[in-house]
Image 1 (tube, rainbow, N blue to C red):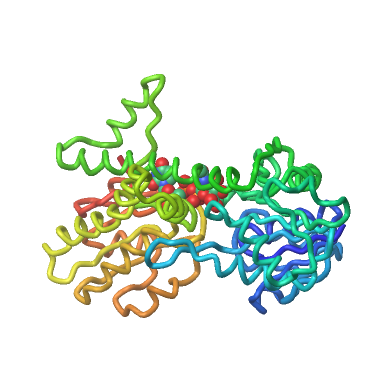
Image 2 (image 1 turned 90 degrees about the vertical axis):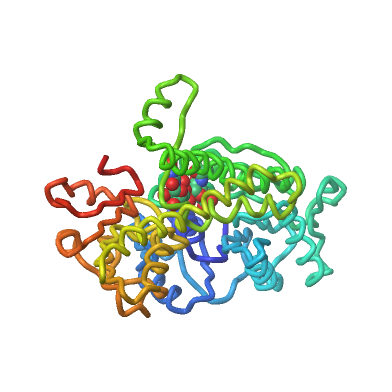
Length: 416
Ligand code: SAJ
């Protein structure tokens, strides 16, 4: 079977290389020439544990090849980003471009799977877009699948990715998957494919429920983190140690509070709940409030740092961690980066950024002359204020004697 994977990012590339190692002939497609060249040399453009080894094996076996344009295949998997606009509405242009790019190559009996996280109704839109470009094709519709004569249809489903960055290769195989067919036959076809590489259970549903399920999973986590973040703000006012409080409350058999932090980063949890709010603004009150609490948290941390920093004439501020969560190199939508960027707006501040997982500062921080990268020991030695932004394992080596009399703001409760 030939599979064409559109988008070779954090989801598309692991999926493409896994399929290749399972014996499928895989065409990976990406708009970035450099990405294509690197993959065809057996290299990776993103960091994810063990991904380099798998991509190398897949490319060397001849089963994975990267291209800038799709090719004819039996299955098309779309794994492109779904960002949001400034108004918090979903931007489906990447998915629409992916559909346009595969349209000339789609044949009857092909299966199209949308893996990108999508607002409710997107899979149906994919079908509509395809029908507009290729009126000659019979693309399965919601609830009318069985009316199509066998052999005529293009099948369509949504199978949202659910993997956790840092554990992608394991979770890709082990997680249960939701398969939302636009119709029953599309769901069955998709199940038959995923059965060949997924060990977890394959749960069949319709495309709208599958779309909402993915958004719900991330909104659930966001609301739970917001609860912890709100507690941290309340505890600050009431002079209570929030980490101790959560530790104690969690000893109740039915309480399991998550950890507060400097905000919620990454490109999923901070984005997906807005797709629910956008679709049902009057009803999604709690989900919106959670987003607002989590978005306020980085601003609150900045205010706290500034209150201490302003006690010094030209304060040196050590910021430990830039990634959006521990032990990864991913700086996308990171609250730590947002905090550092906001501090750097004050030219009187000298900022020492410590991020052992990346070699250089990200684009949005390079322009500031008052930020430079430093080692843990150098940054702590020189700093007036030490801010722990990410609980990377390496930062647990910092002990109280190293911090001495310095002002310490531990946003993750790591040094409690
Ligand atoms: N965070 C906290 N406190 C916590 C847990 C997390 O502040 O107690 C913060 C993290 O520091 C980070 C953010 O939340 O900034 C998100 O991190 P995460 O580890 O919760 O999730 P992601 O974004 O890496 O991956 C999530 C996962 N979704 C769920 O766990 C429901 C993953 O399974 C999804 O596949 C992924 O989103 C996605 O791509 O949608």
